[in-house]
Image (cartoon, rainbow, N blue to C red; front, side, top):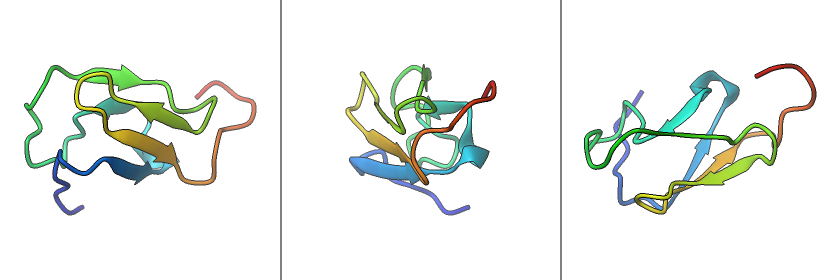
Amino acid sequence: MSLIENTKRSIEVTAEDLPLHCPMPNMEKWNAHPRVFLKVEKTGEALCPYCGTHYTLKGGALQGGHH
């Protein structure tokens, strides 16, 4: 997995990245702000309250199940 800059404002994630948190482990500045878990499963998108990075779940919101 390649490093992602925290300055990137829109990141597409997959179900493999769940539970989603920002910063992600592959970010260059993984300690840029406190880790915050983001609920992306229901709507298919989430916004980090610290850095403003917009996360989009590839394929959209997850249907059913407990993810």
